[in-house]
Amino acid sequence: MQRFTRDELEAQAVERRTGGLDEAKELWTRVNMCAFIKALCGKLEMTEFGRCMANAFFQIGAHRKWPGEERARVEAATAAVLLASKAVDELPSPQLKVVTETAYAFRYNINVNAVPDKLAEFTAAVVGWEKCMLLALNFDLLVADMQAAFRSVEEAADMMCALLDLSSVPEPRRPHAAANIRKAVVQRAMRELTDSMKTRCILMLAGREIGVAAVARALAASTKQGVVPRGAVPDVSGQPWHAVLGVPEPAVGAFNDEADRMMRAVAASSRQAVPRAK
Image: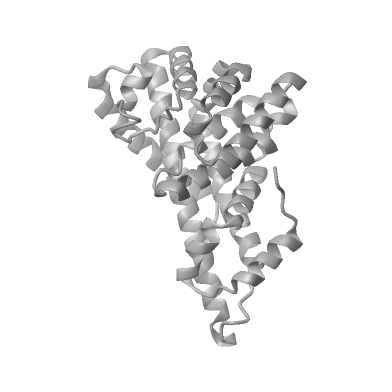
């Protein structure tokens, strides 16, 4: 996987010469997106194999708002960063090879669904999948991850904004331009992270309803088919998410309501624990 030094990122930032909110989207969609997620994941300190796999899986489905190929690129970069940077360190050599190749396939084939064989190999290679689900479906860890995410987003946004070249912006406006870009980056990142966390809430509730092992099996099977359950999204590759997971339909509305309530609780506790962005 291609890695970028600070000097390389700085050179790319100089080329962009960006100075306002309109340019923040370009920053997000180009190579700094990959660097930003890499920095974010690194700061989350996900050292346990199970937590890493859970977060990798959920992040692949977290960027559903991105249209077409751009969304696929974000998914690919995210998967590559998470899988190659974290998971491989704790796998034996044969599985290390499969996961590394899968990360490259995600990164360079762009479309996740274009590599079903690799997905199947990847799923087969991941050991301790039920452990990963147990960790992902733990509410205390969800709260801790959200609090860590708040800190990480702030720190990574500072890192990215430090690389900007604002020489094309009149000097009196530079602090305002930098603040606007930082605010846009933080808001976008928190929207995506909140979506991912809500998915974990939904899956946690599903685990209570039908058992964590059953959810883990359903997720593993759907991953082999390129299907990514996405929480409250009403349709996943032609199938309702609750059908993919085997959740009884009458429970679906209650799950969404309960997940919203839990997200409000998590966000409130996170805001108390972490200073707000200025």
